[in-house]
Length: 141
Image (tube, rainbow, N blue to C red; front, side, top):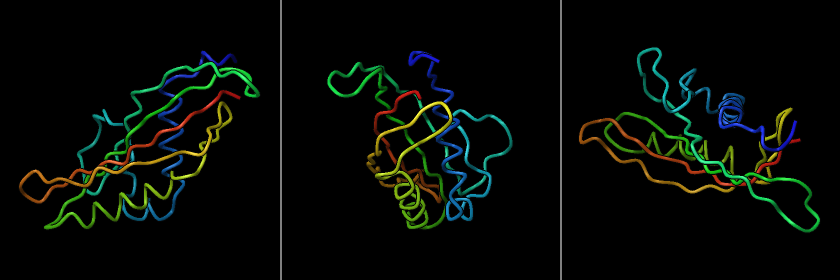
């Protein structure tokens, strides 16, 4: 495989698998970890949706050989309740899963990842949406 064969779908699959491998996250959301544009079964709360819509190639010089990809993806946190606490707690679990960790698959590996949070906001009723933004670099193996 060459570095240019890495796809958004591979990244999405890896991120979803990485989240599903975390027992604490699965205990909260069950099987509601899907890609952002999932159009399958009815939506249930709490839920995570993964948006891997940004990835760009970067050629690095020096000791690093080959092509690295700059990645930015979001994990959207959907929760319900009278406060944002459940969403904030779930965002904390997701953030801890990625912060300073690496995505490693049979196809690629990342450098340690970084995160940012967007606090949950309400629809004016009892539904909340937060976001964990993950950035980093990965390279095809």
